[in-house]
Structure formats: structure tokens, C-alpha cells
Image 1 (tube, rainbow, N blue to C red):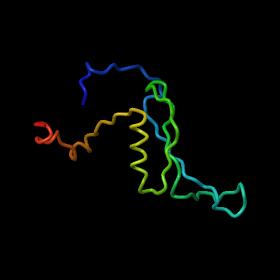
Image 2 (cartoon, rainbow, N blue to C red):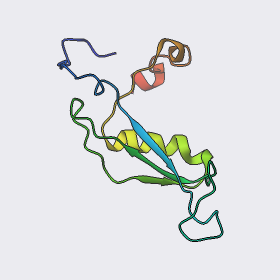
Image 3 (cartoon, rainbow, N blue to C red):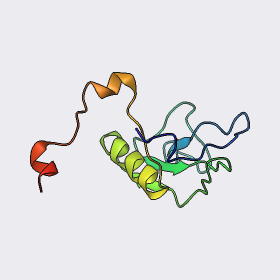
Length: 107
């Protein structure tokens, strides 16, 4: 984790302290009539997009499509990277992550 001396922290308003990724599922062409939907039904495809957040300096880019629920994690990762978001491992996640391998350090 970066040293607190390396980063400048900022005050953030309530509601702008979290980074939000929006997930939207397509619902078109399920019902037989144009402009109609089946309530609570959707396709397994759609788009992922970032929400605007002035405190974090996030300006939403174009949504990124996914065609399967299996694509979802990769598309979320792509959207986060495109917006320069750096994630830090939670305590629970750290048990799966170790430091750099020795072979990588000696190169």
C-alpha cells in the first residue's frame, strides 16, 4: 500500500466517497410488442460504465459492452483501468496475494 506521504488526501462530500460502477442489462426484444418489457426479465448481456465522481476526478467514458455473465469481471476490470482506478486488496483478499516472485525481482 502506498505511503501516506506519497498521496494527497482530499475532503469528499457524502455520496462522493465511493467509486461507483454501473451495470446495465438489456431488456429489449423480450416482449412481443415494440416498446414493451417483461417486468424483472433481462438478457445476460448489457454494458458497464463508470459513474461521475467529482471528488475522485472521474469523468465517465463510453460504456463497455459484455455479451455473457462470464465476460462481466473482465469488462469491469477494463472499465476500472480505463479510468485510472487503482484497487487495494482488502484484508480478506490479501491471503491470496504475495509479494513479487524472486525471479521477477532479480531481472
